[in-house]
Length: 169
Image (cartoon, rainbow, N blue to C red; front, side, top):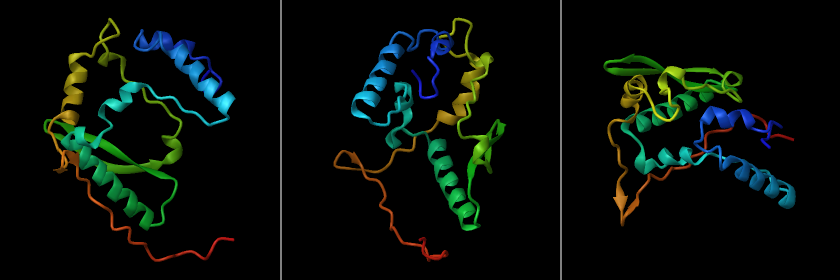
């Protein structure tokens, strides 16, 4: 059972076997943890983990992440709240992008599906169109510096900003 009460049956056909066989077992495990241990649970498909490590990030991933973070700080500094930074694709040859923002309600709890023309008829592979679309997003490595075999990430200064609001009661 999914958190929203749906049984997920429609998702099995949609994913055409990618995790259709394992999904019922994963859902049952989540329910057992939720019921027996009274813990909040969330399930994620393992493919999300494939590119989640910074040491595997493409150059554009890093550039866009840094730019989005800086833009979010700028917007917050202007007093904006309840918005999310967006990335707009401005061109393909060469790949160009810009930042914007939108109300968080336009993104939160929304699903944007991959266009059908990006998935081959067999449902298991991508089309050449998707490959062309995706290639600029994954080209170029941007490895972090390493120390003793581990990524040596930057440390934040953790400098506090001056308080603007009265103490909360």
